[in-house]
Amino acid sequence: MTQKRHAVMLCALPAIVALLAACADQRPAGEPPPLETVDVAGDPDFAPDQDPRATPLQGQLAGVLPANFPPDLPLYLPASIAEIGQQDGLSRVAFTTAARPEQVRAALAAALAARGWSGTLTRGESMLQRSRRQVRLSIETEPFGCRYAYAY
Image 1 (cartoon, rainbow, N blue to C red):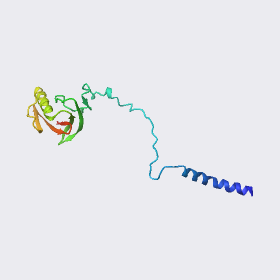
Image 2 (image 1 turned 90 degrees about the vertical axis):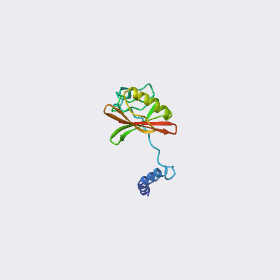
Image 3 (image 1 turned 120 degrees about the vertical axis):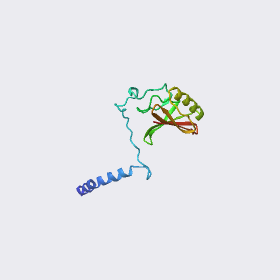
Image 4 (image 1 turned 30 degrees about the vertical axis):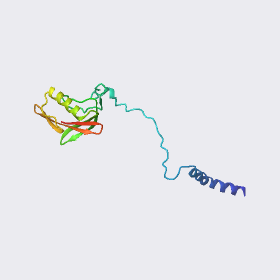
């Protein structure tokens, strides 16, 4: 009789262990299990301090200008790059700054004229020319400053 009891217990043991394991999870239904986190090393191929495009402007520009950004277009600083994309087949870079639109418009108008650009900066979008090149510049009011964008 003890052999039968041992055999029943051996057969029931895996079911008991499975039942105990299922009951051990005390989280309420619907709560996701905790995620395990692992620290990983940085990308060995990425070194911002060695990126030739990442030329810091004395901490005044937050972001990295695209490689095709024309060097003869002035920036109003301090500013942050807010958007990089395409507009009507042109490359477009938008910046945000805490300065008022009038300040940005006056400073960019003077800097553009000094670099040989012609055109009148107006509210909204303006067309600028230098030799045979044309660039669009828009200056818009933002809640805490303004946004200006070049389409080139």
